[in-house]
Image (cartoon, rainbow, N blue to C red; front, side, top):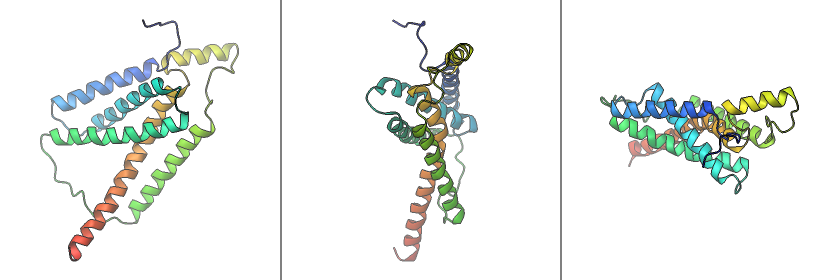
Length: 194
């Protein structure tokens, strides 16, 4: 039975954002709109909630940093799969040249994404107890408890939620850059003599 007197691990705001993301993703599939800005954001929100919910159940078994890295990796895979689903049901598929020769800007963007991931995951590793309400007393403890109702407990699930929201776009962009490098090299080999 659900006990509402206990603190919520995932608060009302992430739950509301997940409900909105589910509706937008459902609407994009039913209307066959495909990939839009709203559907991409809804994929990210839905994946972040699923990752936080999973972290809630596996919390005693793995540590925070490993859970965050696993959630970011699985979230990136899920984003690509849901993006492929939206791309495949799109009404009119635009002809975009997906394979092109990588230039220096691709390497620079990949470096920025990789450094962003290291900074975000490093901050989660260095400050695992940041924002927890345990050390507050009096008014600040009440204020922090009020924030936990809306956002969630400042523990592993809500940290995974925000870690996936922040980290998955960078990891997806990094994966896309690696794919461009691999595809660009295979195109060069095919044009030379293969």
